[in-house]
Image 1 (cartoon, rainbow, N blue to C red):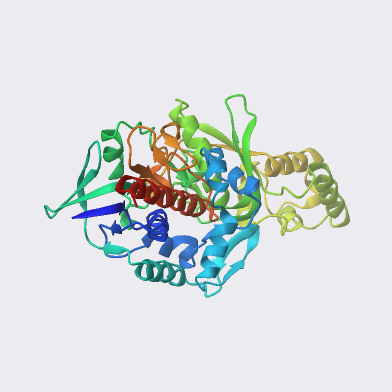
Image 2 (cartoon, rainbow, N blue to C red):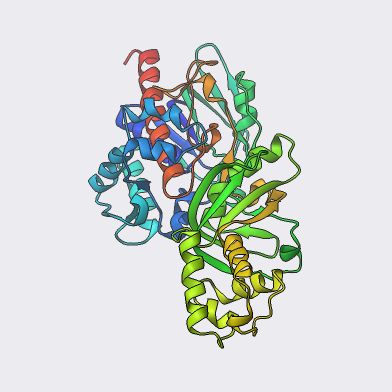
Length: 423
């Protein structure tokens, strides 16, 4: 059996690649080893599917710190605004939420997935579910995809869109790396990103802060010299193993990369009150203490930060919570406030790759032509999505990368196939 374009993988990049290939006139087939298409899309954005982000192009690329600049070229052909037009053109209404995140107005990922599946059917793309690929054989003129049931499919152009190794229950189990290596590609070291971090700090080990959420804090990763490498201002949570939440996920890849370089632990700096200037805060509290000398120090400071964190800070500084405000030294208040603004602690690892939201590392982008997503090592071979060494923050950025690279790969795979067959 022969096709112009074979797509392996039914995630966001694979679905978009199949649609683009068929729209460009290619006889297209998509193989998906799982029972459903678009599994990762279905769980993204808490099941609401954060399809893309409406921020300006430069901002979107800034939010893809893992080789995002590679996307400038693909974006010149198909970008985040084109993604919005693409879905709205299929009748999927989108709405903008905080930080430019775009969701379907239905608040259901099924709307997005079903629109893509309907488009495949409309374009006549053949889809084979529960069809694992066993091996790929490359040849001078065409390639052969070997299926686990023993059958073979020949193709002029092959698009590998099988994802990375994060969230393996969606089918991303790293199958494509071996096929890439067979074609002569380099696969850079894989590591977890957008992942919770572990810590050996006493307050983590004794679970004194477990379950405590902090809103809109500034969290920084410090380099060896103690200077901030990156800071993110978002929410975070203390867990039984370390820290998690949006600010932590965004900082995580910088921590993991430092640990890969050989650091045993990485220091982090937490500012619990980023909107407040330290000295103004001190003066405000001292004034309250002066006006309410008989009030306990805990009640004086209550409301500034969550009570559990306040209890922790008072205990850490050996301050009796019931101590009268008038008896607490000014220097003690300065020290407590300084630590609220500069709470330093260490992390020593992360949860494993299978627990991460996104895979770091992958097929080296130096070996991929950015304008076409074609392999520089092998004719008729294209890659898209998370299998590439491109990764961003959560917030629609990884799906944007997947949809854009999928679109470019599918278009160009079809064009190459058409040229080969003389159509």
